[in-house]
Image (tube, rainbow over all chains, first blue to last red; front, side, top):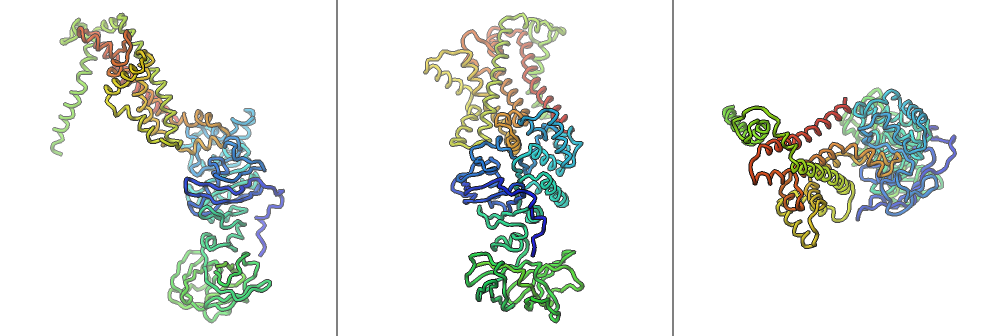
Length: 373
Length: 262
């Protein structure tokens, strides 16, 4: 399956904007971030994704200079910045709370960072105007932050961070305080602005939808460690661990035994479904153990009538529908296959299955990933 | 709802008991009679004029004003710095220092006054205006720290961090962002310090060097001889100052807040 072109950024000369070299952060005896290595490409949009307490915000704050790493080095454009104080790092930060200065007008807020840079008064006017136009709020200059809606404050916070032309833009869950509809609009807009400016961006979120929609690369974190780094397509379709599979959308995890590994295929035995073959390209390295787990996305598992003809290459098993969760465009089935409970998210076709009905569940082994035990 | 009239009457009595003497002092300050007592014989500003012409009182007034202003400035500066340290930073012994700063409120003033006096005698340091000032700073500081700390806790660290990320040094971030945001509390703390210092008599009596009188100690000294109607006028001035200043402060705070939120 080819990668969607949106993730290819060949127009930008690839170089590293930020390097995290074995950084560790400890708070007393608690280790928030274990030795962590990461390279962030110039101009790319990187997301640190994980549940709360996974170390993503701590990592962001270390890049920002708001926290000192206990060990390791942080490099911005090849320069070690560990000892550079935050105000000399030239980074733009958008906080979850926006942190607009309540005693300053919107214009003064956006112009704040320019005061500390060698910028003439006329240039300040012009840059602030351009930034406010970019976030589509050109006429708010005279107001105070409390007179703006949450979404507007969010945009101004972004304008304030980008007007200084930062080397790196750091976004700490900037969308989480907005309501659902606005959040989706802002996510598209934020991505557009980022692409327009070509500014290297590090985005922290616990929302997998945001991460998948916006990122060039996603870093999935858990308990202060990186679980997987990859494109949204990779982390979604080729999860490197059970945690990643579970955290990004609904997945079925099934115990399998590995029968034998060929040059390009691995034969496995899946209870109820029988023998099937998975491409070795889909098997992460170092998973040559005899036991494994098969990861199958809920939307790749399909239900059909027991008599229906299967699409080519599909494997199937008989199951009973336990519960039906109607979602509008799609429907989520919980199906018992033997003693296993599987989830299937199907688009709504002609006939829905009802609770208690027997059905044939099937999937294409191409769409699976095998994890080592 | 029965019993409310009783409660109302009782409340009125309590307030009368508290404020009637103050009202009487103010009223008698305008009495034309040369004895500071009822009945009033007419309206007159003669006692205020007499105050103005009394050198000792004018001098005491100047001393009190200087002392109060300096106490307010020093106390507020130290109090803001201490609050910043206690709220924004972690360091060993933080709790003990916090308790120590607040302690002068909890210790009876006489005890504090005597202790400081004995301490100075032990060190063979003679009494001076500077030491009187330091004494006032010690027992006004807790008020400043309490008020400013409460405000500072409510000002999110994000503001300072945002300012710093935009290029402001820690000191620039303080003056550009933190200070304006805590200014109402700083002003309130300063007013507290000023009025407490201006009103104080216990500590001042112990610490003041010979020949220096503040308004309260001057009144105290005058009362020992006779009850002159001048004291009523002086009392009225004191009441105006110590209640008027905070009221003006509140007014200014409300005005600036309403301007921003409109």
